[in-house]
Length: 65
Image (cartoon, rainbow, N blue to C red; front, side):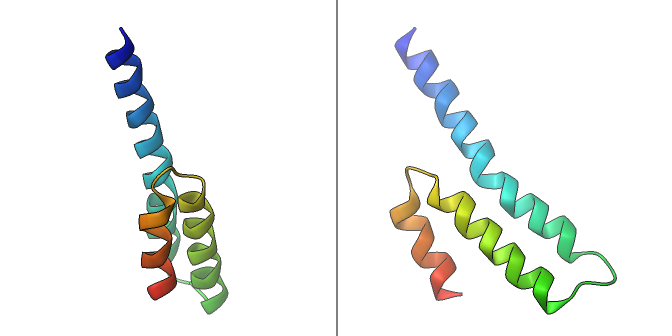
């Protein structure tokens, strides 16, 4: 039972990690995308990654970009 709950929590966390990436991808595919849209997208990805237990590995990737 414990492993099933742990697995479910990992899936939920993975969904939360992917969500800002999916939203950004969809937003930046629009015809009228501005530089402000791109900057806001990076901010949303950063905030989403910062809430993760994996933030120490993920945040440097965003900061490097």
